[in-house]
Image 1 (cartoon, rainbow, N blue to C red):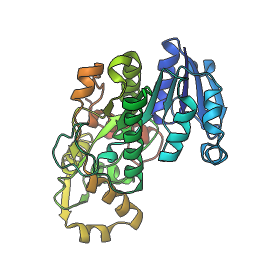
Image 2: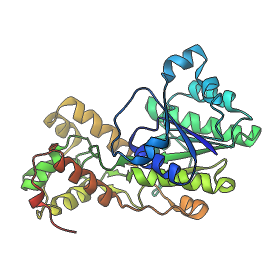
Image 3: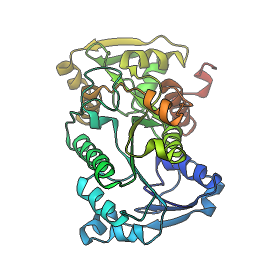
Amino acid sequence: MKIVVIGGTGHVGTYLIPWLVDLGYEVTVISRGRQELYVPHIAWEQVTRLTMDRAMMDEEGTFGPSIADLGPDIVVDMACFKLESAKHLVEALRGEVQHYLFAGSVWAHGHSEVVPTIEEMPKKPFGNYGIQKAAIEDYLLEETRKNRFPATTFHPGHIVGQGWAPVNPAGHKRPSVFETLARGDELLLPNFGQETVHHVHAEDVAQVIIKSIQNWSSAIGQAFFAVSPQAVSLRGFAMAAASWFGKEANLKFLPWEEWKKQVPEGQAKGTYGHIIHSPCCSIEKGRRLLGYEPRYSSLQACRQSVEWLMENGKIDVSKDQLVAV
C-alpha cells in the first residue's frame, strides 16, 4: 500500500516515517528541500523523497495533480495551512485515495472555555493560523459527510522531542529559561503562572496517525487531539523543570503588562500566543475510538528535549546537574 507524507521530514516525520516503513508501507515523502533529519534512521533508505514547492505549485494548479499522479492509497498532510490549498488537494484526490489525514492544531479551538476541551466543542479560533486550521477541518469533515471524502483530522499540541526546544515554563521557546531554573536563579512568570501549555511528544503524534490508519472505519470523518494525557501550568512546569536539576523553582510573578516589558518583543509575542490560548485538551475520544495511549507525559517529553539541548550545547548546563529519574 502506498502512502505519501507531505511535510514528512519534520518533527513528527522523524518517528512516523520509520514506523510506516516497518509496517510494510511503500512511503514517499514530499518536502520543500533536502532537510537533515532530526534523528537519522536506516528506514529512510527505503523511502522515496521528492522536492516540491507547495505554495508555488498551488498557484500554478499543479500540486494536487502531482500528488495524485503518485498513486497513493493514503495521504498524510503535515503541511497544509490554507483552506484554498486543502480544497485544491482534495479535488485532485477525490475518488483516488482511501484515506486523507490532515494535521490541524489545538489552536483551531481558540480559547479554552471548558476544560479539558473535547473535539466536539464549538470552535472559536482567533489569529490567522488557528482560523485557517479550523476552516480546513470544517471543510474536510463536511466533505466526508456530504461527499464521502475519507478524511481524518488530528490536532497536535506543542510538539516536543529530540532535536528542538520546547515551549518553556515562561511560554516562549528560548532555551536559556532552563539554565535559569538549573541555577536556581529567579524566573519571572506572567500573571500567576496558572495559564496552561499542552505538549505532545512527536512520537505520540505519529501514534495518532498510525492508529487512525489502522482504525479506518472509526477514524473517517473524525477529529482527534494529539496531545499528552494532561496539560501543565506554567508554574507547575517551572517547578518540575527546576527539580530535574535538584533545585526549587525561584519564581516571581508580574502582571502581563509589566512582565512583557522584561523580555524581548519576540519572546513576549510568543508567550502571549501560548497563554491566551492556554490549551487543555482531552484524549478520551482517541483512546475510545483508536486505542491511543501516549507514551510520554508532557513533562517526560519536555525533559527529553531539554536533555538533547544539553547534550548538543544549546544550553549551558552540565549533565552532571541532572537528577536521575
